[in-house]
Length: 353
Image 1 (tube, rainbow, N blue to C red):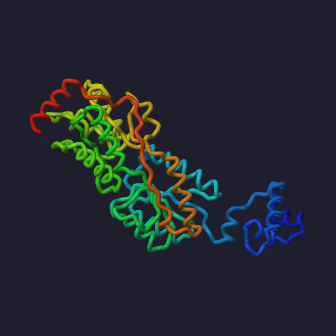
Image 2: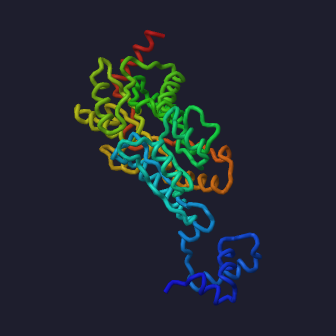
Image 3: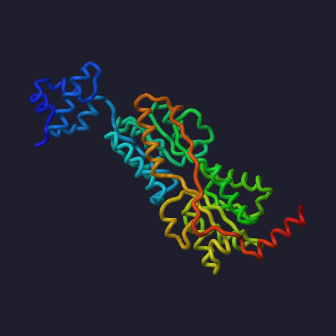
């Protein structure tokens, strides 16, 4: 039978109330008594009743992850890896993780209001925010602790963890230029998403830094999926002067780009270079293995979970902001442009400079 607080109290010759308060670190119980109770609890195999504990301290120790609204029933690998890290972070603190998607016919705001008023959750994690996100305003007004995986256009007042998408795409463009590419296109996600705008800004900045422009048709905004990446790539390959290098807003879109390039009888990495973004593990198994700007999603989940629990404990949101950098992982889909194209591009550039 499981050891109860009553049995633990009888064993120690203390009241149940003293044992309970010692296990929950109440300051009116001496450090010596707290240590004695915890040692006996460990020795006898006592395990706390989490529901009873939460009722006693008045904190619903459950983190809610609100599934990004644009995903529908499709859960991309980045979410799975983020959730793995988030789950580990909250489990280490004996908290629970609740994954929620808005009900059909109900918006995210309505779902959040219901959850907060039910007193079932202690905080919320959002990812892939919109440029101006009403969910952030709502959570702020309701006083619910939250952390955003990503940033909106204005992100000074709340807690967030993000990877510098703009800098990542500057790095990707610089890398292709260093390999000899001058015709560099981008397949971008829908621009209502803050991350998509940041990655697009990086692409444009990278071209400017290398004295290059965005030729007509070289920027394709597509559905955020492998199908969207394939469709956009077919459009790019039909241009009079198709690109020799493509940077994609995600690894999934890049997988679609690889498929469309192979369908044309071309070889990714030799005829057309492709760079993805995310660094999820399935890229290793692409055909050929995908070069990508990698971000540590599992680590992101851990950091986000820790920031949320810190806020519940009283930390100011402004102190829980962290910006990381992605890094280039070279595999087999990046290389110099075909020599015939490279020579043509150089001659054209010399004539126009």
